Structure formats: C-alpha cells, structure tokens
Length: 468
Image (cartoon, rainbow, N blue to C red; front, side, top):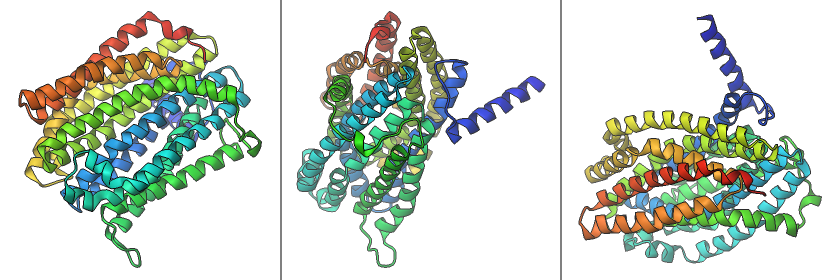
C-alpha cells in the first residue's frame, strides 16, 4: 500500500513538472519518466489542437447540414497545407532535437528561424490562392451550388489566413524538439480558449457583431491561432524556453535552410501522400450526398479528438529518438520507442471499445438527422476496429521522422495509401456498390498495413545511422 502511494505521489510530481515546464535532460535517467514528462504536455497539446475542430463542429452543426459539409470539404483541402506544415515541422523537430542532444543551442535557434522563413513563404502563396478562388476550390471538391453559396466565405478566410496554422505548427515543433513540450501546450490552451469564446459570438452574433454563420467559425479560429502565434514569438524572443532568438538571427542561412529542406522533403511528401488520399476519399464520399458527408465529417472530427493524444505520445517518441541519437545513444532511443508504443496501444484499445459500443450516442450529440447519425456511427465503428494497429504505426512512423529518416515513412505511405487504399476504396464503394462502407473498410485496412510494414522496417535499424 505504501509503495502504491509512493508511486502515485511520484507521478503526481512528474505531472506538475511536465505541465509546469521544468526542463529535463531526456538523454539520461529513467526512460519511463522521460516518456511521461514529454507525453503529458504533448497529449494535452494535441487535445487542444483537435478541440479547434470539435468546437467548430459543435457550433456549426447548429447552423445547417450544408455548414457542416462546408467545414468537412474545406478541412479536407486544408489537410494539404497541414501536409506541408507537418512535413516542415518534422524537419524542425528532428534538427532541433539533434542539436539539443549535441548541446548546441545556437544551432537549434538557427534551425528554428530558417523553418519560420520557409513556412511563412509557403503560407503566403497558399493564402493568395484561397482568397481569390474559394468557390472554385469547393466546386472541385464536388460541393453543390447551395453549399458553395453558403460556405465559400469560410473557405476564403480559413485558407486565406493559413499562415496562422503554418506558424503554429512550426514553432510548436521547435518547442517540442527542444524538449519544451509544455510551452507548445500552453500556446494552444491560449488559442483554444479564444476560439471557444469567439466561435458563438461570430457564428450567431452578439451586440454590434453580426451573425456570420459558418464564416464566423473561420474568423474565430483564425483570430485564436493568430494570438497564439504572437505568444510563440514572444517566448522565442524573450528566451522563456530552451531556445532564444533575436532580430539578428532573422537572416537567410543557406546551409541550415538546405539541411531543413532535405529533411522536410520526405516529410512533406509523406504527408502529402497521406492527406491527399483523404481528399480523394472525401471526394468519393461526396457522391453519396450531404447527409453521408456530414456524418463522415462528424466521425472524423470525433476520431481526431482521440487520435491527437496518440499523436502526442508519438511526438514524444520522436523527440526522444532525436535527442538520444544526438547524444550517441541509439539503443536508448530504440527502447524509448517500444515502451511508448506499448503505452499508446493500451490507450487506443480503451478508446476503440468506447467507440464500438457508444458510436451512435456520440455522433448523436452533434446531429439529430437519422442518416447523419447512422453513417457517422458506422464510420466510427469500422475505423476504430483497427486502433491498436494505429497506435504502433503512429509511434514508429514518428520515430523514423524524429531520427531524420523521413524517406522510409514516405515510401510506406505511398504504397499503403495510393497503391492500396484509394483503388480499394473506389472499387469497394462504387464498383462493388458497398457505398460508404467501402471507404471505411479501406481506411482501416490501410492503417493496419502501415503498422505491420513500419514495425518490420524499424527492426532493421537503418534509422539509427541517419545524419541531420
């Protein structure tokens, strides 16, 4: 009993240290403690990120089915931006973590600034396209005329203001690579708090602020993220974390930027493959009408809420791999990955049971339209059936990325998503007339395949020799 109390007390202290941002050396000491100290703020950070989507759906679902479908179609396009942002973020995390493991803080700061330069440039170019062509973007995604008329403002604002998304991802990746996971978490607490307050104000109106409908959700989200990015820059400039930058650092460094580009290309390609497959899956789903599309959108948002904590643990594994490789401890890096994978699998197993049993009730919280609930619940149940496989697939994929080996996950994604998932989804849903069920099954089988191939390649150990 005494031992149990001591264990609880110890982890309670770890929890306070992790959330409070106490700096630790993750290349020495207990691996279990290191996983816990990094995972907790990263899990909370990912929960904050997914809360954006969930809060928007809660309020937007009160506007109309078209409004929910607009959010789904726009987010499926935004995932292409996420691919670039996450790809650059993987490079930033890998390089910063490696420099921190080598005790080279000035090198980590240089990498951070060059990552910001790259991200901002890409975001501005994408933003211009979003401002000029929002109706055409929705049309390409198969949206009906009524949906385009109601929702193009949402698309224009969200894509036009995408620089807030890009920088939020990138700078938080820098914090994570440095081991400042709690800093990344608190910036998202700030942005989410604002989003929750501003969403109903801009969607439904308050005082002199008119009701913008679904467009208001984009306004609120962009403001929330923008304030968070401002906070991130303050933390970097004032040196409140492990990395401090100054105005003098804002010069283009070709060598550092090229190194980031080389590492990020694999990551960008990797997520472009994965996220573009989601775009095509959404396009297939649009063939079955707005109710089915809305149900699928709600289920994906709900799943993201529970997948984000799993990504949080996966990001912890990436940081541990990067820092321990920098400290010349590859075996410690490998042990960290297997332990993180086990903890992630336990978490995902619990979530899968909840979804399998309570799917209809969960989707019913967001809509009372019968077809929306039925198809949303079916999506939850079929996809959740593979959650334990997802757990290991996520951790190992992120571990490759943390090592700077972004090529291996890119190849895995190419074969599992483009060669297998998309053809299977189209044939099952359209040719063999399985309908939406064909898409759901394709998603599950592809993720199971990714996990199995990733484990096999990870055991080979080539990731231990990658230099960044």
